[in-house]
Length: 150
Image 1 (tube, helix red, strand yellow):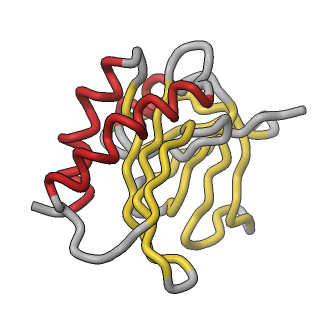
Image 2 (cartoon, rainbow, N blue to C red):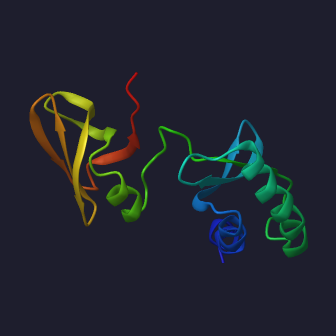
């Protein structure tokens, strides 16, 4: 079983016990160091206490299960206000919100579109930007994230 999937299974019930939702898990190498990151979310926002509680409960379980063969840094944090949308449920709950869509290749001479997410279906998204509607298939976009306007 892949590390990320195993950690998701382990983290899910712990995160839920604290009234949170497991948003994502990533296991990445950055600047020569490995990081295991668990991202959580909840209505009203995630506090530092939520992150600490999940971390304190998960840390010994990760050691006990010995899922990761090498050394790594373990972090639990909020998914963030401008979080990346990955799963169908992420897109569906974000309909009506502002997003940034980064494309693999330019469309209308632009590689990054910003606008309101209108719909999501089987990986295809539709946004409204500057009075125009754009539709992007999953094969066209590399990243979609919420966008906060100040």
